[in-house]
Length: 162
Image: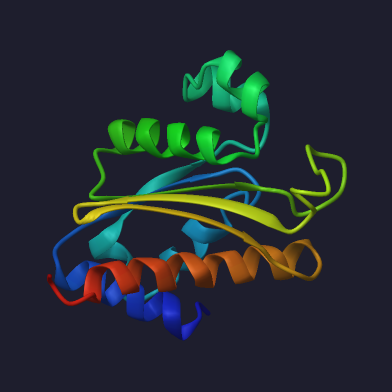
């Protein structure tokens, strides 16, 4: 069962007549799965791609190896490139890309510890760029990141027009 925030986010996306797609590295498809469990999934969910390994980022999504080498697979820059490629492939209204570190052994540093998640969300109202360090085990980090995605989209779509 998806969380209330993911259900509410899905409802708002459906109300706007928009769809959503995902490029997931650290979350390995969990976000797409959570959105698929809402009552609105048939109206909004385009699909997703799990790009956990660098090979998939480079060979399937055509992220330049030089970008990954310069910034690491878990970075704001690579996450943005994943969002842009996924938006093109899925022709989606909303595109969510997520990379990050849920367990040791990646590109973690003191400035980028385990728990760091990078999000790049493309919406018709503009992009959302977010970096956050979540606490807990891998599952807890991914679940928190999923709720953060839903909250960020909700905030963007329900913000008063300026």
